[in-house]
Amino acid sequence: MTFPQISAKYLEPLSMWIMVAGMVALLQPWSLFFHRYGVTIILVGLVGFLIFSHIKPGPGQQQE
Image (cartoon, rainbow, N blue to C red; front, side, top):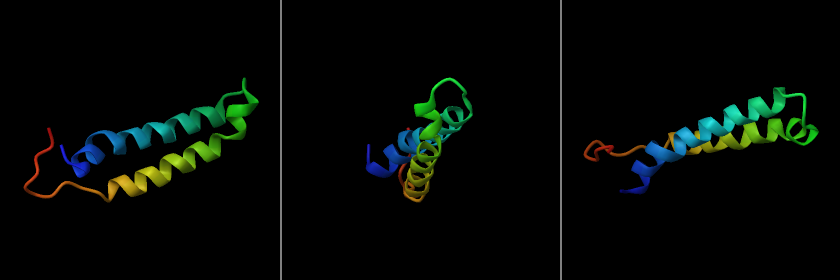
């Protein structure tokens, strides 16, 4: 499995889930720690998504 395949199959969805976790952390009222760093978590997921969404497998490579 090449890095573009790993990126498309695992890292891109992981970065989307990190963004969702950042939104949940920002909107929950119980923990000040998670509320304080919610935007940072969203930004980390966004940067990861921007990077990994541009690394695509070539036309000859199959996603398994």
